[in-house]
Image (cartoon, rainbow, N blue to C red):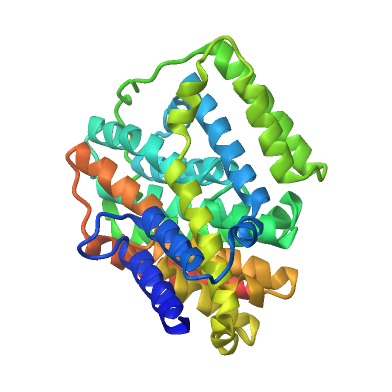
Length: 392
C-alpha cells in the first residue's frame, strides 16, 4: 500500500511538471485533484482529514481577489489604466519604461495572470500601430507582471499562499520586497535596452492608435471604492482572507451585473488545483517525504535555490506548498515567495503569465520564440535572485 501511495504522489508531481500526464486528458488542476482523490482512496487520510488539509483562508483570499478583478475588468478599469499609461509615452524608450513599471504596479495590486491576459492585446495593438517591433515590449510585459507581482500578497497565487500560511501581513510584504521588485524592474529595462537598440530610441512616437474597450462608470466607481477600501483594510491589518471575501460579497450584491458574469471570470481551475495540491501535500507529509527536502533548505540560500528549482520543475504553487514546512522565519517565507516568483522569468515556459502573453500575442499575429525569451530571462532571473538574497 505504501508503494502505491508513493507512486501516486510521484505521478502527480510528474504531471504537474509536464502540465498533464501523457495519454490522459488532464491539465494541472485535474492531475492535482485526481492525485489527491487517489490518496484518499488508498487510505492515506479520510474525508474529514482531507477537509482539514484544505486551507480555507487561501481559497477565500484567492476567490475574493478574482471577483474584484472581474468587477474591474467588466467596468473597463484595466483598459482605462492601460490607455492612460501608454498615452504618456513620447518615445520607444519611454514606452518601454512606462509599460514595465505600469504593468508591474498593476500586477502588484491585482493578480499577475489577469494583467497578462488583459494587457497583451492592448500592448500588441499599440506597438504595431506606431510601427515598433513588439517583441521587446512583450518581453517587458512578461517580466513586469512576474517581477512586479513580488511586491504584495495579492500579486500572484503563490504570494497569496505564502501570506495565508505564514501570517505575514500586507505591509510585511511591501516593506521587505519593494526594493527587490523595484530594482528587478529597473534591471529588466536595462537588459531590454541593451538587447534591442530600437527600444532605447528617444525618437518621438507618432500618435498612438485608439484602444478599444468598454467603460461602465457606475461599475467602475463601485469597483474602485471596494478596491480602495480593501487596500486600506489590508494596510490596517484586517485579516486578508476575510477582507477579500467581504469585498466579493459587496461586489456581488448588485442590480447591475448578474452573478453569473462574475463567476465566469473566476479561475475555477486554479481553485481546484489549489485544493488538490493541499491534499497532495498532506499525502507527502504523511508519507514522510518532506524530510527528503530538508537538506535542500538547510540555509536561507538553500531555501531560495530550492524554491527556484522546484518552481521550474513542478510550477511555483506546488513548490511553495512542498517547501512551506521548512520555512521557519519571516525571512524564509519571503525568500520562498521571491524564489518561486522570480523563477517565472527564466524561460518562456516558467510561468503561466509568460504563456498567457505568448498565446495572446500569437492571436494577434506575433510569434515569441523560446530562445528569444531565454537570452532576456536568464540574466534577469540570475541577477534579480542575487539582488533578492542580498537585500533580505
